Amino acid sequence: DIQMTQSPSSMSVSLGDTVTITCRASQDVGIYVNWFQQKPGKSPRRMIYRATNLADGVPSRFSGSRSGSDYSLTISSLESEDVADYHCLQYDEYPYTFGAGTKLELK
Amino acid sequence: EVQLQQSGAELVRPGTSVKLSCKVSGDTITAYYMHFVKQRPGQGLEWIGRIDPEDDSTKYAEKFKNKATLTADTSSNTAYLKLSSLTSEDTATYFCTVWTRFAYWGQGTLVTVSS
Figure 1 (cartoon, rainbow over the protein chains, first blue to last red):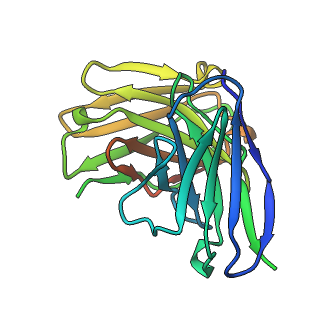
Figure 2 (cartoon, rainbow over the protein chains, first blue to last red):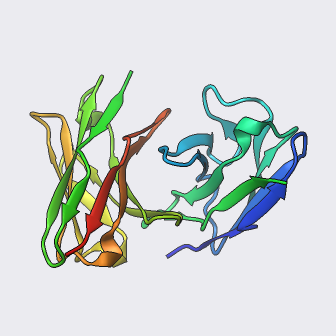
């Protein structure tokens, strides 16, 4: 199975920060990476699809990038509503696999 | 707008089975692969598997092959996840979701396994 190694597992952040979360794929997954945001007690929400594409309705301060097998989600100028858990997912090959998640917490 | 409506919370005994439902409204279920995802309390997301309601073909993560069974009923536009031989490790919220041009998620079903 493809492993998605996500880092960091948690991050203490301040409003206005630029935040970057990374997933490293254990083998080539091409562009087939999604990023999801999840708030407590809620269903996940897709933020980025195909590694770099902003999902509908997602603020432009979110962006996705790829460098080799490393996939990153960047939040520019963090707002309070962005404090949440974030999960990456590879869907290039079955079984699909998620990263372990990143929890953003306010300082 | 497509909506996924999942069945209500379940409290089940160890060793038994439970069948969860996910009803699609706003479109036909055959337009999508339906995925199911597990989330244990305070933990990350795990992909369980997916079903193609068009032909009932399925894919599963290895660890769920003897635990989960996915089915679909096109007449009621509903997908199902059956979990068998339940243990405390199965206590979790289970989501159904589709990922196409848009991504839709159900609200989740909490399954609690306890005697």
